[in-house]
Image (cartoon, rainbow, N blue to C red; front, side, top):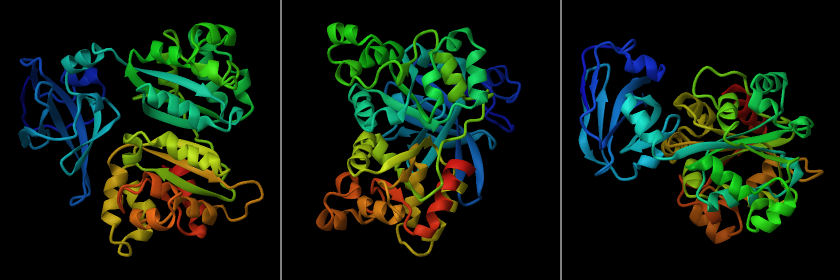
Length: 405
């Protein structure tokens, strides 16, 4: 693929606009290499406090990368090898780290890349479950991780009128039995895998438990009767696209999702990107469940630079790891949790901070080996979770992550 770049500005609009050169009139795109995929990416430049747009080229045969600065019309990074960038991580909405830069993929740069990636059989599928139907939801999520699913999005919401209206407008989603989902929060998640729609149905198992026990003995529903059709819905070929558009749109959202949270004697926990990438999401949730804390809010998100800086501002100039904290939270998606203490707890922030353990992982392993950071942290920056340090900051942090961002 050859890109001829002249002076132009670039924004993350739709693929059709991009390919038709309506927004990038001076970019000529000609596919000449079947091994090259191209993406439109954004990078926040901290020195200038601006968001810069690039074309990221990736070669599937040797995993080399190249970056082209669209605004300046010149190569920013010449074709080179870059460890850690894999084709499976290159999809719209994800972030990848190219050397020290966190790049957010906002679109495909050409039709060939879109068509090529869609032909690889990678799909996204969607499921909904009632979190209070089973106090060990970590078992469900761990099952999916063990089967090779990658969690792309996850949010705990209450079904408001906007959601119900959006679902009723499609013939396929209107048939989904959501009556049991209307009396409390619901967790909606999106996973990615090869042939994800059928694979997710097979892993969860049929709604009829007798059929699950007979024909799918290793399925979730055969082993955990709580996850029946009333408490867990899995998308099929007719509904997965509509549910994705409703809950996780890449553009033109149909509804405004309001993540569920209590904002009453709760505290914030963020499972850091490195812990998600290492497959420890469900492990950390299990530790929280086993210690009788309630997860009253869940939201997977990709935080921007200004949001991370505001959240972590109390550490700036105080903690030497502050720059690393910022870089880590920007390195990919994280999972924010609102934590409610065990029944009768009046000091949730302090109690949960004790469960998280010391920020220094080596200290945690030595003195508090049963804490989250001791088990799943790697170093003082990649220490598994961010948690609210000061009780007086708990309300602000939860409100900021679940209501403001």
